[in-house]
Amino acid sequence: MAEDITQLLLAWNEGDAQALDRLMPLVHHELHLLAHRYMAGERPGHPLQTTALVNEAYLRLVDSSRVRWQSRAHFFAVSATLMRRILVDVARARKQLKRGGDAVQVSLDEALSIAAEPGADVIAIDAALTALAAFDERKSRVVELRFFGGLTVEETAEVLKVSVMTVHRDWGLAKVWLLRELERT
Image: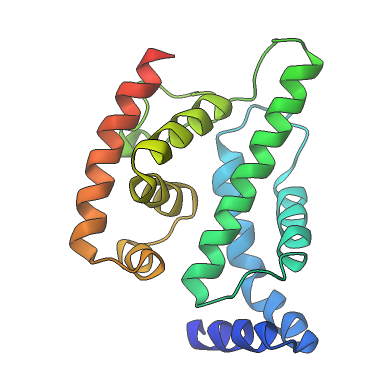
């Protein structure tokens, strides 16, 4: 199936509009799982539901004609980035409306030990990842792909074109750095 997805992505790159129609049923379930992972940490009453997040990401993906798809892993990495940006945009809009009121919350998986406590603010996480990216872009991408994108170590290595050992090392160092950064907020 991964080969089918990659082939359809490459056909879509070449301008085959029907490839997109054949691609979406194959990736819809995984996009929904990815969105569910993001939404699981959101507070009850969040203005977006999982399906709405998938739909918004889909619209942005279809509009992303500049992307030269490389593989299934690359597609889901871009999807994860888009979903993160969508949630950050919603959180910022809500925060603006409330003039500094409650920010949208996102719970981090305790097993990952990124946050000291559950319920870390999605804007704070985004700011921490942005700060990490300014310091070390690759480590920031590793966190985004592994944690938010749900990619395996091997898929992350493929997307970033680095070794599996590099991903393991970056993942460990990034978690420690983010934990320290999030404790400051």
